[in-house]
Image (cartoon, rainbow, N blue to C red; front, top):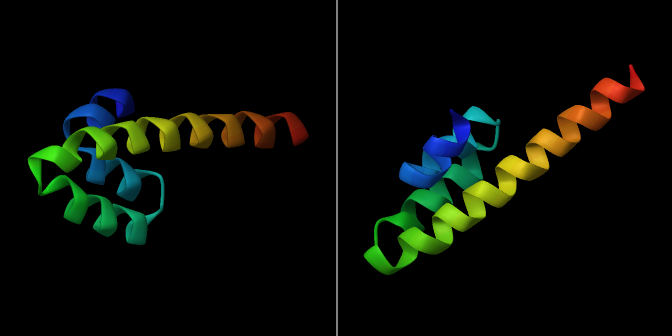
Length: 61
């Protein structure tokens, strides 16, 4: 579900993973049509990092 959000509404993903300042910056980037693609790529990358960090945290426990 978060992957769909990352592609369609990239700024919203940052709020769901707890990074509100990056979400605001991404929203500003996303307001331009040219900036939508970099914002979506950035959101997908952040989602993959979030998932990796979560898996590593679960392994430590």
